[in-house]
Length: 340
Image (cartoon, rainbow, N blue to C red; front, top):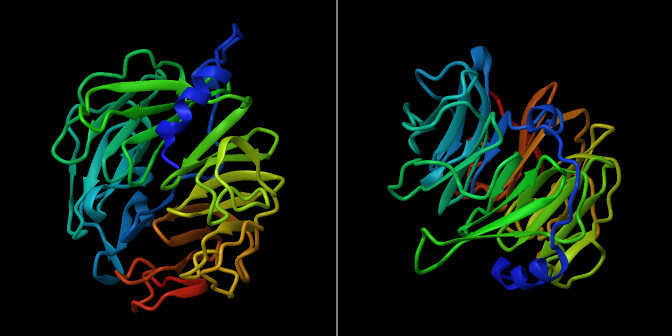
């Protein structure tokens, strides 16, 4: 389901009422976030001295990115590259060959960055947002009518994004197919106390401060997680509790729970759920990746998944471009440790 089909529903059901807003600076994302990033064909992870290593795009083992230091968070970038947000709020773009990076002009005081194949968006420390096209565009100005943003997630393949506001509600953005400068912003009905959002290729999920996860959009592969194989026009409660972080791939979703374990649901044809039983048949019931405990970070992209534990980084799922970093191009249906 295209998110654009949901905007009339959002507009009808989600008219905003007066509320007490929270200071964006006082609202933080869930703990342990964004030390790894996973895109459709590559992945990256923070390493020693706040540097980073990346793999995929035909590189089957981790490659240390030269000259990159002081990095706090990572995000997938265009064409298999990545973005790195530095401690000083500046941003670097990592080349898809992983042989270096360049600073992104026009960005400062960035706290969160998310990107897909079409667009990237950065949240600044003052709660404003800058978005730009990744195919030759550059950051210019802030998005009008969007302030007090805590965090944002950009769809991996579509020109869409959703933002969590300081008041705990969610607003989704969509740029016009014909005119990329035309933007619609609509509230998502029925959500409150949201601390994080994650977007897949046609579905979205929101994490509440209570640990509940609500998903909406396309659901024929079980990526909504509510026990059905149906599209949802409005947020539906997924079958997990105690979530502290969520991530979305193209057609699968995972949540890190407060006990350090992970639950995944949705498409599993390439083993991206990590439960050791890859199956192309849709399954909306959450399952646990094999042997994965004490997880502190989690990231999904395309048909692959990665998690960080005290013992390092493990990945599973699609591996055709080396995006699991295990020296092969074979898919893995259970978490596989990466040596670097």
